[in-house]
Image 1 (cartoon, rainbow, N blue to C red):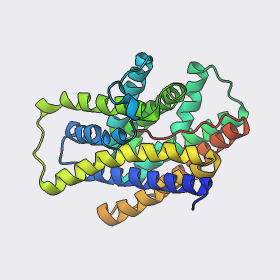
Image 2 (cartoon, rainbow, N blue to C red):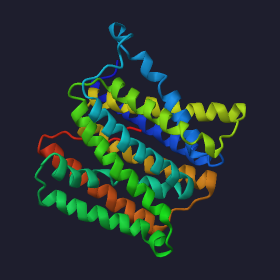
Image 3 (cartoon, one colour):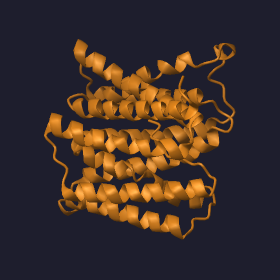
Image 4 (cartoon, rainbow, N blue to C red):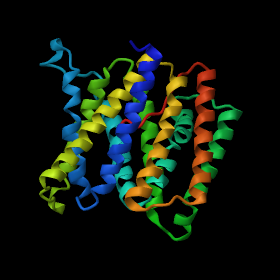
Length: 293
């Protein structure tokens, strides 16, 4: 039998692998409209959730007293997921993943205004280091006016508010209900893109697009289970394995070789987010920034 910490480690590893494969499929699906890919993420992401609904909630599982906060969480989540989907198609995989690690930086800043939190010297230092890392990674994009380098940053901004909203929602709402409303909102958004022209996928493509949605749903649930069973401080560093997967897949599938600037910048961003995380643990806040998409 596994100990609780071992279970937490396993769930985090499964979550990182699921998100990495999902990113891989998103990048592969560049021939399909973004809206069509979002549709599969939304509808197939519902499948794992229905196995978690308690029997006594089968007929009223959708009820909530915090509709406005769900709406804000879904709106910011939609901004984040659209931005990351576009970025994954237009930029090297390792670049997108590296910049996405900067989400804790923006969450730290937003927490000052939204949660009225006080941020000390160490976390401000981490914010500065993180922004330097983003500039180092994105500098080629900014100098050549490649607007797609802004999309991972938009993802971080959206995800930052998602983290704050989920922190507030989780006090009263089960995780499956939070995920349910987000998946439904993805589906609704995707319907508005139908006039742009969806493509009829082959059987293999249909399988991969469906797998994308299922993996997205499972990744969020495994992430939650990881934090439930194990200390956050033990399992959170595992999420940086995503960069290793991104470099591996990017090189062997798309022949993308990360530049020195990408590697140096990613190290700065990771160090920055780890400093923020360690200060949160020290202050007994136990806050963690997860993708939740």
